[in-house]
Picture 1 (cartoon, rainbow, N blue to C red):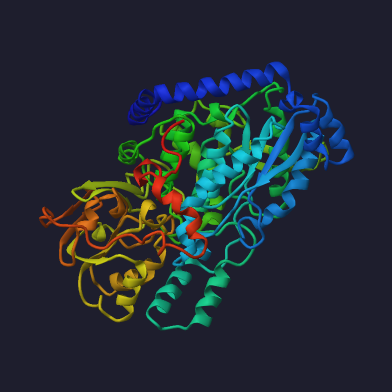
Picture 2: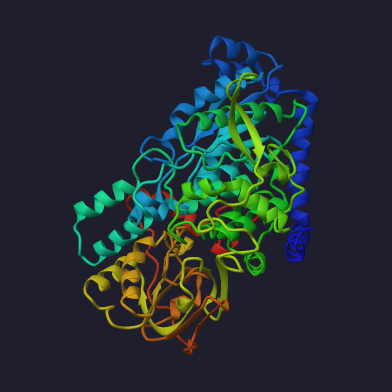
Length: 615
């Protein structure tokens, strides 16, 4: 039986979204009916249009594309070979094309989308384009699918903004089935505890750049997703819980036999669920209100990335669904934290996978009534299908390496990483929503010690993260309790960069016994650690938020346990301090190309999207 709060929140989302969701479904169902009645979309193209669409195809595929008997499958890829998470995609198109051809379809690379890395741009000007890139990726996905050549799509994306952008774009073509094809995490490198210790030592000047670079290179060392549980791996976990991956596909390492088998299986499945197959599964029907609530539950139960307090809102809106931070707050009160992955613990996603992974995680949440079981997925009807894990079967009666799924009935093998719902690490979710006279914010508490959940201290106000770092280096933050206020970092001010570079110095001060916290209208990401933080503050400073009125010395009380954020000072009559950069100042590293985004982007609470909330 579904937990009553899960049901209540879902019913509220359904009621709130009735008009927008209804309009969205009417549009995509009409398009889907046309496909089913009239055959593959390319059959309605003019001869010149169609000839352009298959001119470069191999002879065998060209023959199939000329007719209408074979479904067309789009490959939309985020491949580049600079970033470890996306490098494995280099070999995916030929693998996918071969498997689609064997299944009776024709696959083409329809387009590419940008894939930037917050890990590379952290603390740099390029980070200010990071959140905006999600909506650029959505637009690029729409362009790729706009040729009317396709009956399904295979989406190749892993990290941060890439997966949400791909899904938002694909939902504009909601009548088409869509399957995400993951690349998997790199194998484990330098232990997370050692890496964190090195970062703090570097922040204190105890080790030099060469030693620090050696530590980072030993951590990020090969193709695949970074192994800590940040936004990239949160993306992957959520896609599986939403039924957009094949069961168990999420955390299988790159370039393994099982990874290749799952990639081929995704391609075959895409053909089976086209409008012309027996199991038509449009992405618009997969991403419904229940799937969105399931995603929030999974985010909370895993202590996932705070970025998804925005991305999930934006993805839901693309499907005509209105999700709010209040929904997340209500769910957080009843969803327990059942995983510990860095930065919430010392284990990485490979340890999670070894402990039982997605099959155990989903199965336990289903048994506790915390996930909706009756949902449509790319694997079929019912989330119970995701209790099974993929295996390669061998034997006399089977060809070597035959992919099969086996239901996992045994519990977690490592309860320091993955626990049953009945014995959680924490009785509530790892992400709390805050509200008070400074606005609304998000706080990730899963890695924060209980004694640090409440802090009341004077503000130290900064309008740029570099100013805070400089104050730390000058020793101006030593020996005192304070709340660092970093403002003009919201989506309208400068694209809402992650401020993760601030974590090591603040952690140093915390370890020295000082009480410190951060309040910001910027982001801290899935890599947020042990420093208490109120992030994504909305309204932001550049949009008239009260954070712009704060001054040094104003006492701020951050109570992540109670969910409150208050200032113990009278702000009446004050004028805003500081200001966001002008368009002329906000230039370089391509930022000037995104000036229009600054003027149109919505607030963090509404998904920080340039598309608004309309379906």
